[in-house]
Image (cartoon, rainbow, N blue to C red; front, side, top):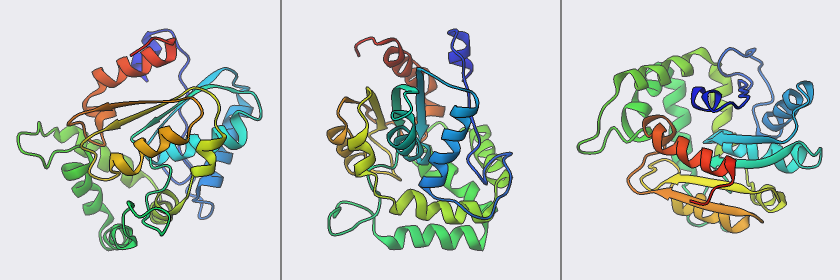
Length: 240
């Protein structure tokens, strides 16, 4: 956000319902409500020619928002999906490369048993790749992930696991016609690149894929210098 402010852009961020400083609402923790909330913000601010950037579950939120609200309302210029969950994380008959339901049941069990420990273990391990040999462990990054997690609603986080893992967003991606950049780390241990980015770019009408060898799911933070350049090039219409 600071980087794009320094480039002269207006930057807007909103808390997903139940996350951050938003109200701890009990219901509506699904992609439809996430997208509708984003639409309410865009309408309230009368955003036009906007570029929507979503990371992880936020990538799913962006995909549904752009397909269902942003493009039909003429508000969106471009979209970016960073380490995003679409088209579908869950293993099904039509998505055999996905992750089995037991993986997400494990997330739910860990969250319910000890949310504070869960929000410490995930960033300290696979999310930022700090579990890899020779990784540059950044304690501040881990603590900030924990801080952001503990600010939110336990129920929102629990229900959100179903939202990010079981929502099939194939139709969303197919409906998007604005230029869309798909960014993904090739060492993403949570959302494997073969089951996300490589599939997503084939479904998009104007999709382009940029991957980074060795980069983790949290590359937007720990490799910000590289990712900021990718984003700026795309925003300005420069070729990679």
